[in-house]
Image (tube, rainbow, N blue to C red; front, side, top):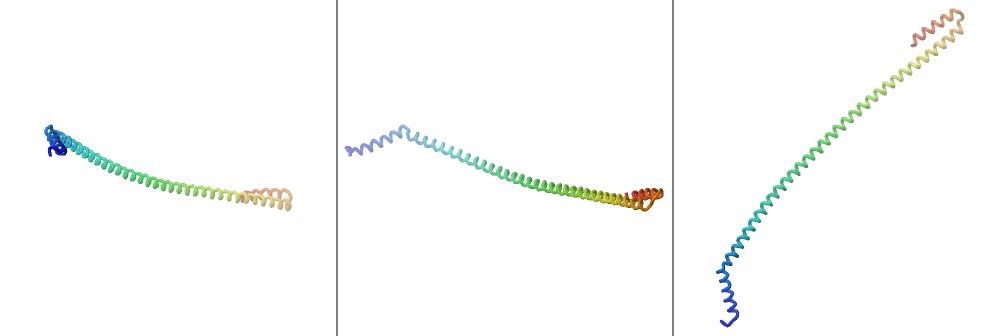
Length: 161
């Protein structure tokens, strides 16, 4: 047993471990592990805070997105209503314009009809006067005829115009 190499390796290992314990290596390793555990705990806490902040930012951005979408919808609705109102106004203006133009055209037609009727009456009167003058000239002679013709022509002109 004392000559066995494995025995001496085991004894050396036990002495090595006792020496390490005497020098405080276990306390340093334990302290190092405790420090590392504390640092990891702090990092986890910081990560949890960052996660919470990110969740709050996400919720805020989602709220702002919904608000922007509702504002955009309101703008679109308002624009549609404005377009419909403008279309109605344009339709009313067009109808008013057409009605005015129709009245003006009807007035011009009536005026042209009146003018044509007056022209026809004037032409008929001129023709009647000329015909009466020819007939009277051919059938009546002398100063009495001239006087009657002049008087008749004047009377016809006054009555027709």
